Image (tube, rainbow, N blue to C red; front, side, top):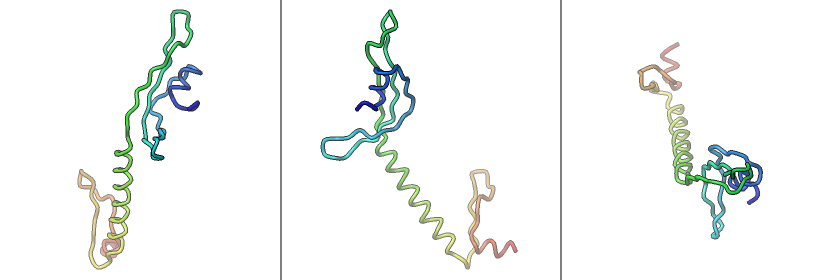
Length: 107
């Protein structure tokens, strides 16, 4: 707990921005949180409290990992196709990459 963003803000006056950390749950799992925290000062400049804003990004991170795995499987599949030319285009229609079949046509 001592290294949690809010605790650091209260203890050290640190302002934390967009820090990700795992908040442990009682069942042994955890939530992945993106946090911002700041100390609150009194009139004499002493830290008297802290403010924390946390966003649960657990599902977002899971979705990003799933997408990465899907992209990697797709990349491996495309690279394995040698009898057909496959080009990958960006939204502007520029070629980003191509497979071995396309390389053979180019040569």
